[in-house]
Length: 287
Length: 285
Image (tube, rainbow over all chains, first blue to last red; front, side, top):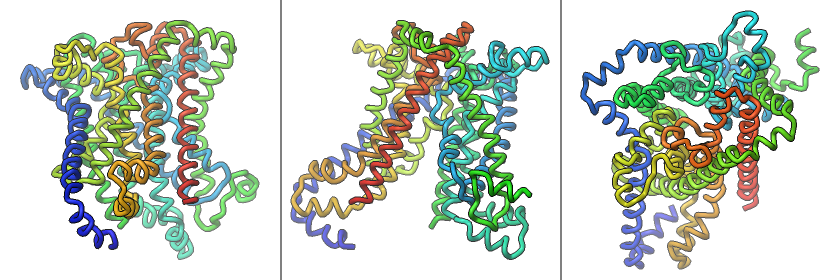
């Protein structure tokens, strides 16, 4: 209030300052937008122009190629395994962390967050060290004819690792803010634990949960480094979409590489649009 | 029975009414141990079996040393660029109204959402000598793609949201009254920024800088396409981990990985202490 009242007088007394302010403002906006256009927007645009550079037919041909389709299937399969597991784990972890007090809580949160600060390459490497031929369990797995590394289970494990924190870390602040009174009231009134969760907790956290799942899914489908280390790059069998893009690109098949890449770029755009909508929604709930 | 076991554990619930403590915490601990703790512990165990001398020898071999130097150098340069431009972008998004501001705000998250390999090939196409941005620069004699400069460009792309998203909320909460008080007392615009605004943005900027740096150190997908990957010149440390793995030189791969991991843990520690320091200062003020 005070600020608004003093503003006109101050600006009227310093007209030169005001002209300078408009100029500075324009300059800063132009600089920021220019930077974002060059560094962030152009890379996104070029994916689509490159993908369509030989026309629509070449674009479609690259997508319906059997090996491309196999990579799309594997990516969808991986996400279909990893995202629900993260959903269950994330809700359980957030429940334990926010509804109860216990010693070592902050250490547990640090552990859950840890995969975010590990290089994707290392996230793959740790599983090679465990399950690879020279790894801790390698000889035993070979004896029993179980393949994890250079096979689909390794891809799922590595994706699991890199997406581990997403759901839990979105839910923890939301559930912390809501406290425990509503759940306590429900229990005292005779609701069972499940009823309390479905009828009281879930409606409160659904937007935050969706937000976490969205980001988790985007990362699960797009992960490259970790998956690349454990995949073995067998065409049509252990190549996810990002790995297929890499192979096409390294074979100088740029149109096909960018065509498959454009699907993942569209996933990113859809993710961001939904994310903005959810943020708007979350914001409204908080108000 | 089960209640008496729970009460003897170090994890002790205080809210008596809400059910599910034992099962949710049990599954959380087991799952975290299985997916995160045991695999990471395995990495450190493996490096311990190498012995200290072998570890040092690997790290000090010229190729590894060059890759670590390159990774740190390019990540540092990109984090500096990101600190400056991230601050600028956050400032413009919070302080100014202009058409399309919400769309621009969403655009900042593209590097988080776009898979790194896609970013990698797109950036390479953009900065290559025949690319939209690479061609004009090549005419000036500046080569970007397939040089360390290209690595910096990729890391600038990857790291920008870290700075913007850490600075933005702090700037949003900043009380404009302080600025207006300073201005009405006759401070110039630069004095207002450097003495009033910057001190409260500094912790967030440092945190964003450290986050971008940590991400840049370990980044793989967006870099390997644009880097050129010449050993000793444009070969980053994470790529060398992959190359060593492909040669089945597990010991060396582990040693480089541990060096990278320790560096990012130290950065994490730095971020935490900066935040503690900022919180303490906030309370003291």
